[in-house]
Amino acid sequence: MNETLPLPTRRDEAWRYADLGALESVWADIAGQRETIDVPAGETASRQIVLEAAEPNVSVRTLDVHVGKGGRFALHCLAIDTDYGRIAVDVRLEDGAHFELGGAILGGCERTLEIVTDVRHDEPNGTSNQVVRSVLADKATGSFLGRIGVARHAQKTDAAQSVKAMLLDRSATANAKPELEIFADDVLCAHGATVGELDKAALFYMASRGIPPKEARRLMLQAFIADAFVSMADNDAREAMETKALAALEALV
Amino acid sequence: MTLLNIENLHAEVDGKPILKGIDLAIGAGEIHAVMGPNGAGKSTLAYVLGGRDGYEVTQGKVTFGGEDLFEMDPHERAAAGMFLGFQYPVEIPGVSNIQFLRAAVNAQREARGEDPLSAGDFLKVAREQAKALKMDADMLKRAVNVGFSGGEKKRNEMVQMGIIDPKLAILDETDSGLDIDALRTVGEGINAIMRKPDKGVLLITHYQRLLETVKPDYVHVLAAGRIVKTGGPDLALQLEEEGYEAVAEAA
Image (cartoon, rainbow over all chains, first blue to last red):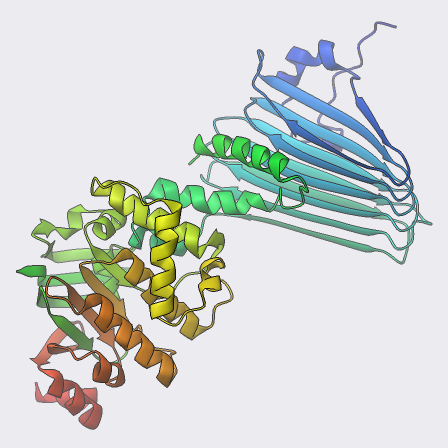
């Protein structure tokens, strides 16, 4: 039973942009490791995940979430600080259950950071909302792969994805890959993805008021990633996340 | 004392010459109006002085407070006391007016070696200025210019100018898009904030109407990248009656 699972390959869509070389260094320790979260019917649960630097600097966190009827689960996460970092979450939603994701991917150097979700609306009336903001500098690669599956009888599903990336250097890469599989016919599935650069007119406007370039970029990026955390109900938790995000941004501006 | 001294300024945009030898000196206590037809180079002059990317100075010299202006980055020009009022103020989603202005004021104070203003002190100043310019104080909490009407954006520019309290204001068509009441409020704002013996204003405008409230000491006519005529406030009236073409040709 001690046989290690085979290392993923890029042929598997969910590992399409991953740094498999980096993954190999920790694979023996993490293969098959999943954290299971079961939210009972009608209950509310939330989690925050912030990747942290390690040696070797690779961190993979995998969640397996089941949300019972009318339940609610919120995940807020930061893919930061690691050379290869991955936050993967599989969610199964029962009737009327809700999944909320707010994530930020902040990286420079040659880092590869990713958030991968697979949200399965197995029953009717489920809702999900996913907001991911990436800020990438230098030669970093940030990827969001978001699969949404709506089962044939999961009518009145309402699923939304908003994915935006800001590239601070032309050498950075952002991947945004929504993947919707919808078998029901009375559903709402909205998804939007953009990749852009900081507005030069706004940067000049701020400079003309005396704000130095670094601080101008920081203010704009802070506002940009704040979208990912507005859904956090607990003010203290949100502030803690934003403080960590800001520290990670500091290294990029 | 001369605040701003422009000598033989030539500038181009995308390789196309726009300013073709401008000479202009603004002394302390003076308000200068620059008028002229579309495409004369008025906004280019403002942007060159502000230091916007893409506006290439090819010849000439500008000193601000005795220092070489082109040696300073845009934010350093602001810290040295220059304020550039925009014809089209930029929207900055997610950044509140208060946050933006406090960052601006404190960055300028830091550059000058002064202590930062506390949140409370800053808010007090901001509220006073908003009130003076008849801007709803709630607008200070909203994202910079996002969802503001044209008039509100221009009023917001003046509130910012009041809070920043610059030595020299370069106002690029601050009057465009304003209704008559807003025009008077903005004009009175310019007078209240900038009509002081140690300050100067370069007021770029198409119309004479703003000049009824902000009485300029000098009026310059800019045409095809050059100042073709300079006069007193009467020149603005003459322009209004005879048109730019006639005045530019006579000169």
